[in-house]
Length: 151
Ligand code: HEM
Image: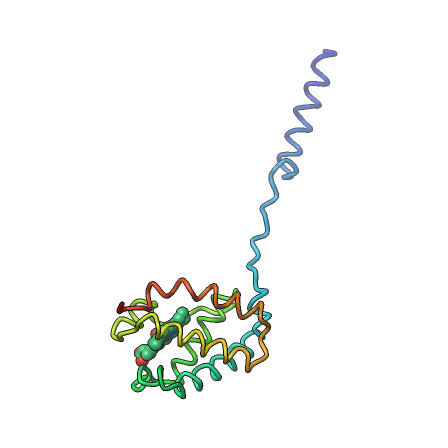
């Protein structure tokens, strides 16, 4: 009987702990890192960046020919959603995947570099910090595999 009481109490306490969840691991909070999205000025800042970027793209002699038939207002919206989504913002990019979107164009590495240069100038013009610029470019850079179609 002397042995039974402590064993019974131990079992009872263990069952109580398990039933109220004390012994269960607390699930980690899955929170998305939206620091880049904030540094880009959230949706308003990103929309303004997209406008600035597209205005500069179509004014650039190297790049303008690619966008002759593009619906520019829609292109701006797609870009803004994409930048918002990749930077950790609450947007969903619903445009074409990068391979399909660029498949019908002859895009070389030099064209890709020219577009990155114009994006940097647009970000400078919008007062985006150097660190945020580099973070966005680092996220977009791997897309060169889907975007560049000619050697
Ligand atoms: C990381 C680099 C790039 C990103 C993130 C990007 C992103 C995008 C996005 C989001 C769209 C819209 C797709 C849609 O409407 O569903 C698009 C379309 C387009 N992109 Fe890019 N792009 C990149 C590089 C380039 C380059 C280097 C060129 C050419 C020099 C280019 C030319 C175009 C053209 C012409 C369209 C419009 C296609 C159409 O009229 O339907 N892109 N791009």
